[in-house]
Length: 231
Image 1 (cartoon, rainbow, N blue to C red):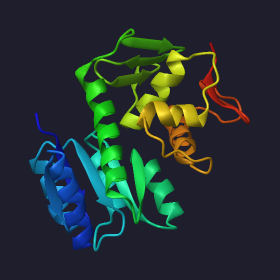
Image 2 (cartoon, one colour; image 1 turned 60 degrees about the vertical axis):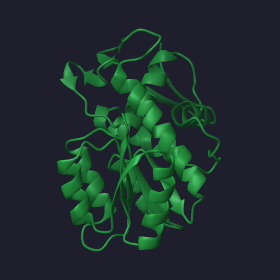
Image 3 (cartoon, helix red, strand yellow; image 1 turned 180 degrees about the vertical axis):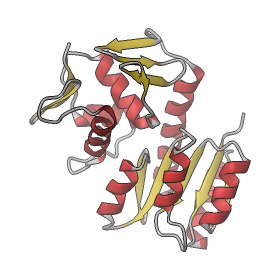
């Protein structure tokens, strides 16, 4: 089945270029220059991934991301201008899975899209070599249904947050570096030591889980090394 990708950017040349590269990869692209048209498309079509420019007239890409996460779990990649570090962090906090800074290389964008779709399809198809259920101290992850509960209460996670928690649970008792988490999730080589993507997702996970940074019940920071869930 052909994946459906939503592309939203008010810079027509960028939107057209992104759409062209994705269509060359046989994706079905829904391209819009305004947020209102994009929101209508989300409600009308079964979208598999969204590429959202942050700076849009009227409703911003961040607002679209927030609306998406109220209902949907498909991956969201934000397109940001160089230097918009606060917007990147805000986007990740609102549930975006990744961001790409303009100007970008189209082939890098395509690689990011493919990585997100592979991971999303893997979780939603239920394919997993290991056990379908991961449990730890009141935390339960169902790999087959991509559902998570904490103390028997549903926990709404983005695909990236679910991925991080799954990796830490599978490697319970072991320290996992931010770089290792990044490569396991995205499967590409675009990590850099200054990349704070994982840090933001970890912080957001802690907020959702009411997990204390000082005395964590679940995710512990091991300074200079990474993160772990105690065995």
